[in-house]
Amino acid sequence: MATDAAIVAPASGLGHTHRRDAWWVGPLATAVGLGLFIIYSTFRAFYNADFELGHGAKVNPILPENAYLLSPFYSPLLAFPWLPSWLSPAFFILWAPGGFRLTCYYYRKAYYRAYFWDPPACAVGEGRRTYQGETRLFLFQNLNRYFLYIALVFLVLLAIDVVHACLWPAEGGGLRLGVNLGTLVLAANTTLLSLYTFSCHSLRHLIGGNMDCFSCTLGATRYNLWRGASVLNKRHMLWAWTSLFMVGFADFYVWMVASGHFTDIRII
Picture 1 (cartoon, one colour):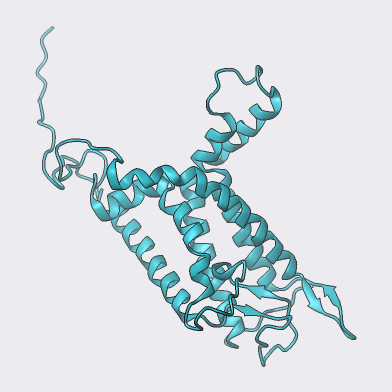
Picture 2 (cartoon, one colour):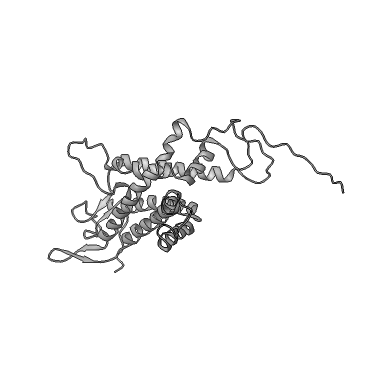
């Protein structure tokens, strides 16, 4: 039986599409979100103040006794006496998590679409006619697996910062255990960063890639690890954005407490 079917030519040219939905909302939101974080983190790196509190650091006049809080932008705190005072310790730190996110498989898609329009969205025309892939300058994206190794080390250092945030000055010297709002902020930041890192495509491939038979290698142990990474990987975009927001908020919280604008509320 003959049928009539309308044949629609594919969209061509930058931004050309037959889509009728608001496809541009996603790239626009991504551009704004990433842009704001880049501006804020750059400002805080140059600001180079109010990034730690307690145990020998600057004391908040409102709350003279406080557990040690350190901004994740400055952790671990590196001090080199031979460097000029204007050179922020954050510059020795931010390149590592920044490189991990820059080369992340999800973030590649996000900023390629948001800033380069390559392509702007699914079924939307892009500027070039041929696919070139991540060649030449973009070969650095292959460094993602190596940035992953560094990110895993940073998770341990951030977890140590959470422990420090539980230690309060005790009478007569020494320390006592306690929990403040800053502890919860740093703990939430470390948790979300861990979820983002453990859901990474490179980590999933490191655990279960390059093999055809799990039972022929490490059996159920490696297979279960791969399944766990796969479950987290399904929400990789969620962990990417929530961890990005939380690491910025954690720095902002420490900044406000260290500068005396906020009081770090004691919970336990």
